[in-house]
Image (cartoon, rainbow, N blue to C red):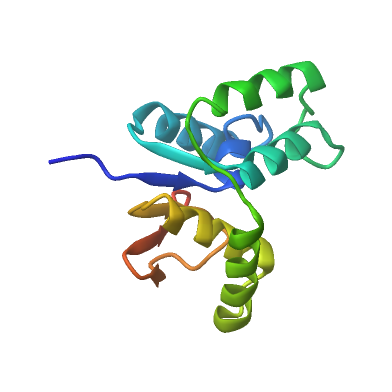
Length: 140
């Protein structure tokens, strides 16, 4: 049986670097080590860099050069490019599903990559978008 294709939302990646959240950090690191077919998007890579380096993001903040190295490493995963057609699809999904545009873009990127699961804490655990299942990996 083949492994699921899993889309990683920004928050899952950020927790792997957040020393102020030790339980989530350990869970995120275990998830990342165990995944065989992980997918991110250009949106996730950009949000990840900002969350690592800005005040109010991870504690302690990551040096910009180290954050760049982390983004470079993540770019070796399958990366969905958020282009104009995906933005328009995201706008439609945001209107239809009452999601924020940012969450709708994550859903659209997950679907475009034929992912089975979307790991995020920003959407409702168990929610489905066609064949895509939303899972909150930090849910107790």
